[in-house]
Image (cartoon, rainbow, N blue to C red; front, side, top):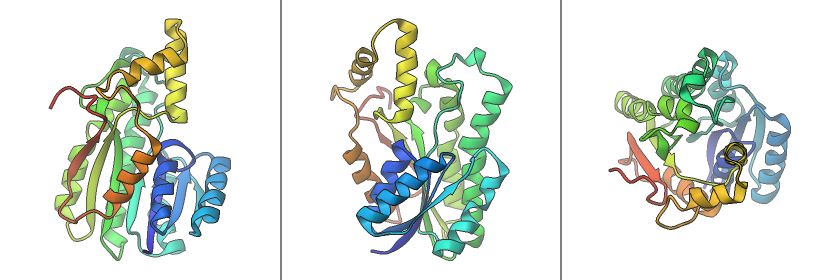
Length: 254
């Protein structure tokens, strides 16, 4: 299979696992993140292991420069088949919502809503084929928690965005929101480490507490995530405008 993909947040964590999943399906990729060194390392890994093009493109998704990503990807790779939109947490997190500043909320809105909306809009207008776009969110966006409340509240708008763009541009876009449970990524390590420090417990004890939130009594595994992403990217066209919850039944509400 041959395809062209954009992967954001691709230097580590969820984004890097997505890049691996898509590369395993033969996708050439534009890898986007702020961390140039991390992107270059990811590019070398993907090119060597999977024999695909993996082009690093350092960019800040909270700035207007990120609006050029779709055009750059099409120039370098051709029309886009898949876009996987992943991102880190706002710098303030873990933080109480009352302590989040104006800039914290603006940062989150730019990264979680404005950037995906502009990427979707550009794909709808200029891409020469129908693209599948997967927007990453969290199970906690359905029931916000104070340590990640800023990102939870803002990302709660992603299902509406997926529904809007899927219905407005059915010939150009297929949009899916992927709400994830707990995975041991570098970003999550930082978050859990800080929460553990504040409570005076070890990070491992805190991770055990997180794992116990799922009836499976464990965290999500990278290989499970890669398997799901690879399937979603090439799943049936009728699966569109939807939210997929992948959290090991952590969320107790319907």
